[in-house]
Image (cartoon, rainbow, N blue to C red; front, side):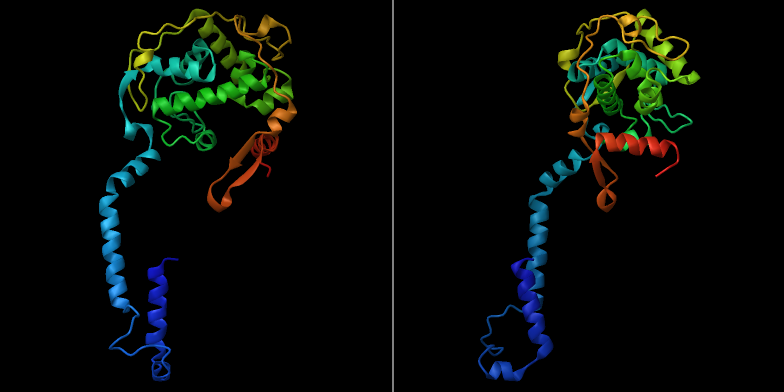
Length: 295
């Protein structure tokens, strides 16, 4: 509470009581020599100060509002679509070939794509993923690609660097992959994994599109990427062995995250008073129950 507000409250209380006894007792001075600022004067001063502050800080306020806006509203220029994939690959340590294969399979590189299930954007993020990843505009290619790459990187860490299982988790959810002990025996997921591996083996050319971005991608212009092939996607039964026959060739296996590692990760679900923070394990259980219509 400001001093102005406190003074106003004092002035109001005096005006309300109208106690002549208080004035006569010397506790409050008379109108001629009172030191209490009248309510109207305080209100006028506060209004003037607020206007002055708003005027002087207009530029700062505008900058702060931009901070929370979508990337498309704070663009610094344009870049080729492939440069966003290059940076995402480098930033999160995920294969460039894998990223473009997912984009090809998900939307055929259409940033405005919307599926019947509600998935949005070039990498087809679901509404809950859009919210969880802090994406303000899922149709902004830069935001969508960066968020999905973070998600794919998390799947890769969880599945010991196995790109086949990461692709399966991206399509069906990591809970189903864990439960199945490999690629789930779901026709859509089986076909999806095979498609991803095929795209990686053959190579996918990213469309020559100019995209509005918020980041300076000049260092990625013309930058070469390492292309790697892929082995067969998975067996028809949906199981994946622990050897490298079902892994994408040329990738490190990485280090499998332990339960203790995941217990250190906290996920916040919901916003405002509805927000609930839980461990990653609890979150995955929450997602699993939610997909079953429970909880």
